[in-house]
Amino acid sequence: MKTIRKCFILLTLLLVVFPLGAQAFLDVEGGVAFAGYNDVRIPSDIGTAFSLSEETPSSLISVLRIRGGYTFLDRHTVSILIAPLTVQGSGKIGKDVTFQDKTFLEGSDVSSTYRFDSYRMTYRWTFLKRDSLNLGIGLTAKIRSADIALMSDSGYAHRDNLGVVPLINFRAEWFFDDNLGVLLDGDALASPYGRAEDVNLALLYQYSPETVFRVGYRILEGGSDGGGDVYTFALFHYLTAGIQFTF
Image 1 (cartoon, rainbow, N blue to C red):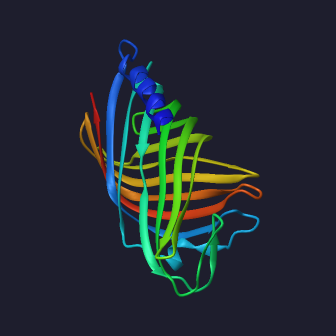
Image 2: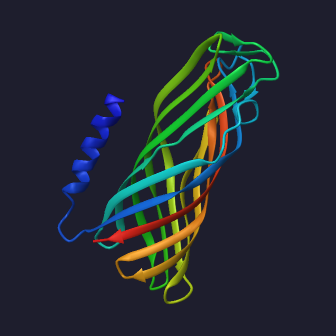
């Protein structure tokens, strides 16, 4: 966590000292999420494959995401995203589960915590800019801080992970009316070791030139197969509302 704080203090300073003439923005998004699936096997070679979402189901998850940044020279955007996610569930497991060399017996009452916090810095170039249509493409550096934990009366085990992942960023914004539009944006990339997709589809309402509201659906999906280390893949559905202020 100290590494994350140092990185984002530096990135925040980079955003504060933005170029002359740049236009700053702040975007806040909140809502609820629920798991489509959440499959785990740790270690991936000898651990038990099980589903956190089925064995330890959770209720709806409150979510909050904050993005700040600026656009300079009309077409170049730099931003920072903070997107925490913590899911807590509980249930009676239907089989023996070996997780991080700890065995949880069939029929045990088990609580779980799944944390997947995402911190991202993005650069995007708007290659098409029209009165009603903007299309952009860019790169995102994602810092992933994750932790999976199981706990029962017989013991506790967890596995944490901190890593940096490169992603492709994209954004398509189309205003089909003076004040109404559609937004499709996100970060995504796949490799032989895993994949990550965070994609948002939203309806926009431009309240003023400086303020845009939106409601939408977001999908967060991906994971990794570490080849003997960690196997974890999850899918979350988000129902969200957001607001972006331009300064």
